[in-house]
Image: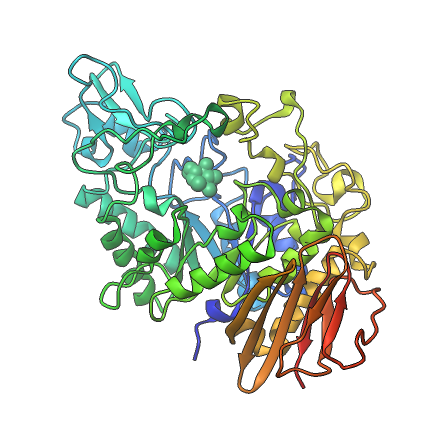
Length: 532
Ligand code: GLC
């Protein structure tokens, strides 16, 4: 039997922005529990919750001060236990976010590590002497701009931080650190967590000789400071795979929990994160290609074909349209194409991950300068790198603050929250939410959509099309990526197929050429056809 995560659909919750239950303007675990029935109705199978651990929130939870507890802003361990139990009672799985590349500088381990050069935990983090002439040990740059090194006056050494200086990097070559972090997985598996999304997995190990990174010949300032060098020696080192394999072994020993790796790498290097038959890595190395893809039929067809061709034997594909770090799909392609994108995401072969709010078509929210929270934006303002716009609160109804909170939300909601909310869209067949529900329901009734083979991937004349087949069932998906009408000629083996779903439900179509072989697609229309 297939594991649940090959069949199912994942849904990412940014907990600060999903549902507040205590009026402090910040979402929390009790809020998520209160919305589980919504997630069941939507039709997803598992939720991944971005970090909820105690944190000074320098990077909004991606700076963890205690890996085995819950931040009071989000609730208590008991709230999390209740959430897991309530989710499981509804058949939903719960994934947490493991942040293993770095901790908070307030984590007791780092406080000890920086206390003296001889502290037993000194080596749990990456400490280096200054360069011979003084200054940082090498030219590595933080992903948030500036040197990836911070000088500690008291002990006269630099520590490495791939992100903020409040996020010191762990030294995964230290066996005691490694063992302590493996215990974190066991702690949460014992509490019933069904798996983890692993933060910046490809960053975890740095080259042992700390060589300078090569200068990036394509750098230009609007790309952001981090792009001045290529991360050749600071990321994606071969030793990372043994660590992923050890995590996987723990996941397997606990009844096959799921590990998803956050990895931004080209496909050829991404594939190594599946591991090998002897040493399997994570089950799902995130495939982020649709986030950066040019929105053209030929380009998308090529992405799907080459990704499918690159998968190792037994490697299960996955697809994502957005997350808490990247522009939202509705902003990137516009609302009409966001409907097409939803159909693409939910009909490709592989596990889809939805990003909360995309199902009601929230776009990036313009956050006034005075309200900016994200350290990424505050450190390199005005380049469009800030992530607040994609982390704004969910809108549930037309009430104050969209039903998200009784208090002032930590970030503003979208301007049209009074009409773009769950309650309104649930009652409007033309809205985005019913489309998502229909797509998710179709995946359940037509197994070919969830787990079938994919074939005939074609991208011509603005139409991306492909077939999904399983056990004699054949579905054809045709997506018009243009704003004009397009004629779609059916493949030879298909005549008078049944239209299961369209992204443009009120489009009146006829049998264009009278032969049952040509379909006139509406502007921005995607269709799912069943060959009967
Ligand atoms: C990942 C997270 C991002 C965070 C960074 C540092 O990329 O998705 O939100 O800022 O890691 O932990």
